Image (cartoon, rainbow, N blue to C red; front, top):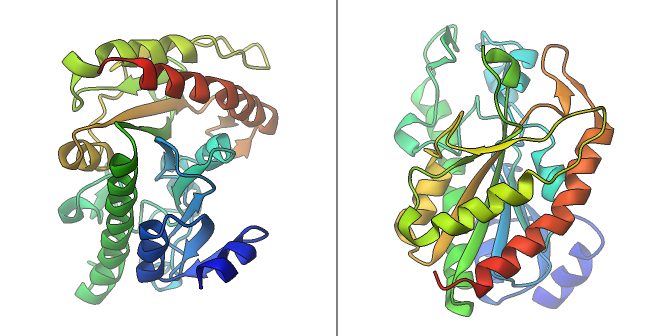
Length: 287
């Protein structure tokens, strides 16, 4: 099965069950798949000591929720992280969410992953029934089954592993100057990894963006790294560092939903250089 699948996914995305995805990871196969319920994608072109993730990239919102949802499509888009998968798509291991966080939030634990209110506004016209909730929570659970298997495999092969946890945030809602890049570090081992975090912050500050955008980079300025994705990996894997990396939405117009492709491409092109540099520094560090 693996040889046939490798041939297919070399050319196009392949739909795959969770059990098959887990099996492919166990076999150390190379593949690119979408989960059979279309909730996330995973690409493994090589087994390397780092992963790129975009858990909030998704915008899908299943039809059974449409009429009950008070938030508009734009309001949902506004709180998602569009284009974050594109920024990291060239790397050997990429995992990304396809569903909107308004269905279930992969960066929250299961007990709070389904919103009742979102950013101060009631989300549903009437409370979700249990069947709808369980449908979404099953997808959340399956995503983390795959994450666990993936990091387990990488930690078994390498001394330590690095995860680039990519997000974006709405800078216009702040009433002060905020950085283009923010690193959240509250829940990592800063005594062990603090120098590496500062290293990554410094690299991000060198990013040169079009349209006269000045690049700034700070640690725990707008967000502190409290996401479930980071916490789950950090709590379960002692030799994996998760870099919660937020870019402000300077690559789009938050108020209209227009994407600036030249800025997205610029970020993508420069991450192609900076991420391998950071991986090399991580591998050489004593931590």
